[in-house]
Length: 101
Image (cartoon, rainbow, N blue to C red; front, side, top):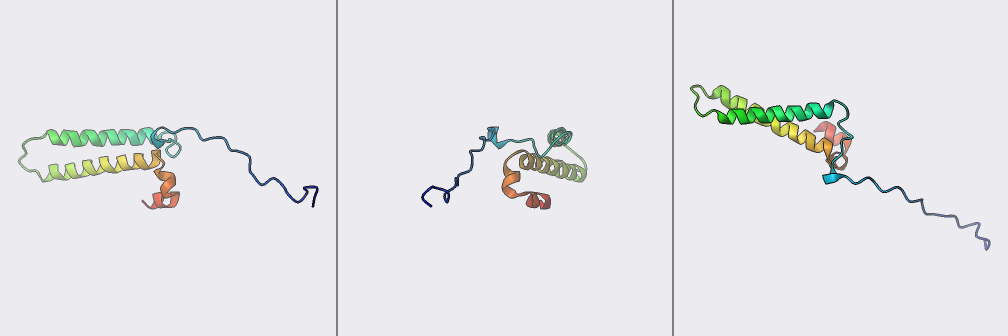
């Protein structure tokens, strides 16, 4: 026991420091064509909301209100998806909870 054979090194070697993320942004979860497709979807839904707001007068506004609801919902949900998949929220929530969401 006096020769030190009982005691082994207990510390692990230092890992490389992680690459810095700007604002917690990562593109790891939306690879390939999925990120540009989601960005274009967000842009088109924002343009739809903006175009709907330009209309000042309408004779039958039921369809316009439905279009406003759908385009605004599409914009907010696609923006939420971009935020979840492109930030640290994906790791924070966990893959199973994101799949349920």
